[in-house]
Image (cartoon, rainbow, N blue to C red):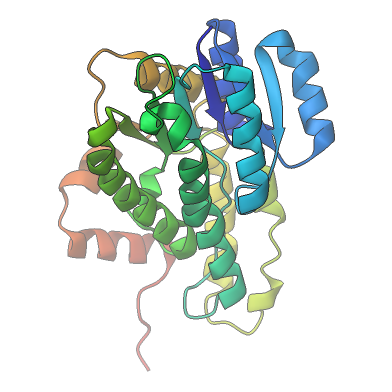
Length: 285
């Protein structure tokens, strides 16, 4: 049975990927931060799922997870690693809490580094293991290519993940391990409930406050119209199994016109459109 490690499987894209892959006959080792989530998922997915208890920023715990997987594989290589776990920090960059910004990068950039380092031997860096080299799938975002106001910390982390993935893909050619990026747009997950609950009162004295309130409502509404997690799960399966995978897959539910504008319009034109839409145009006086 082919085995895959997926980080952050308790909800959202990670859960959707675990659901699809177990249904297709894979054994999924899924990371969770709470033991009760692991027990819940074990009941849901059965014998094809093994929970790994770690936070992606906890190097020692990640290494223990890799040791658990190595023992279970019994000399075989790991088929795939999906770096999915992540968080989203929002706020105006000139006012955001630096500690929140650091946490954003720690989880979304350093986390995939620690996980990749721990599991790379099982994917094929350790030449003593049997089987073909595995693949790494890094879950980025449309925010890894285009940055919108007030999600600067998140965009910075995903832009970084895109560069991390490109360097890693070229370095791991030595071992035959491929690295593929998936950059989804909005996905229907519990993150939008959390986004709606974000307290923006800390910006009570900020000139951005009324714009932030409008942006939050619009952003959450669009997110709830996003793609179902299982669709991302099927795309992850494709990235792991396609004979000749692309280096990056996009999954954006936006309309053709929206995609064309974001892709083809000059940056300055987009700046003006976004500023006018959100009310970010400089006021005279």
